[in-house]
Length: 317
Image (cartoon, rainbow, N blue to C red; front, side, top):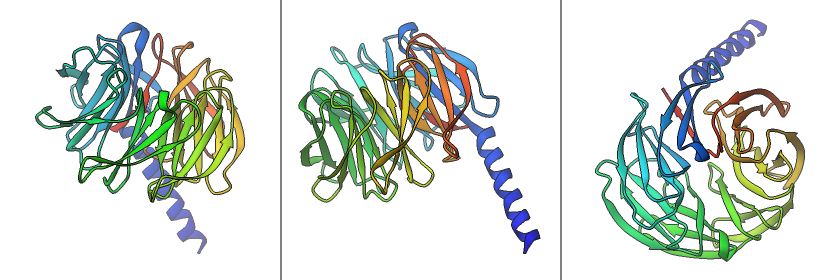
């Protein structure tokens, strides 16, 4: 029995090392118009890609081998996963593109326009715009459910979340949450939606049926973005003004740990190993790596000026 356990442990270790070796993180550096590429096996930035237009958000499409970067001055840069170079641009005039995400099939790209209060839908293969959806004021964070049925949009200035049916491309529900929601995370089962509310210093928990609010969790100062880890057991939330990350037990709906990171943490995403959580620090120009087993900081990686990394920024090589 002991030998079987040892063998399984060894295989799990090999799998974890393999995932680490094959993964990259893409971090937008808004103040210097670049994107840092982090090799997660080496735990260091291996390349800097120039992206003009104040890069903000990141969406990875492993199906089409694309990395999409939203730009605060409008539009989206398309980076090829293999060459690590910008290969195309989506031009959106008079737009402020912030939130960005792709569906799990990899055929649809969603881009939020902060000024126009819309979400543009694109075909990822042709980069053709398919539809423009009206949402609430100043849409920011977005997330797609694992079954590709729902798109959730945080409308910051409305203090609401929109639930969009991706079969009909119509809004099904709009629900009030905390003050100025920005980041969104959705469990793999789709049974819980979490919003980080910047001005009310809390996280709202909703269920998908009618976007019913089921909990409100007080955390640190100016929570910005959120990421799930450990089979969705824990939610990690960046607190901008506290220079911390709150850890929330997603069953008990309470904060169980507080981790010090760099100055003004913003974007956060979980590595494909479901264990390591990466946090981009705006004022430090760095990324903090957290081990979600033990809630300990294991590494700080230098990136660029104004590191933001808003979105799910991991891909595999």
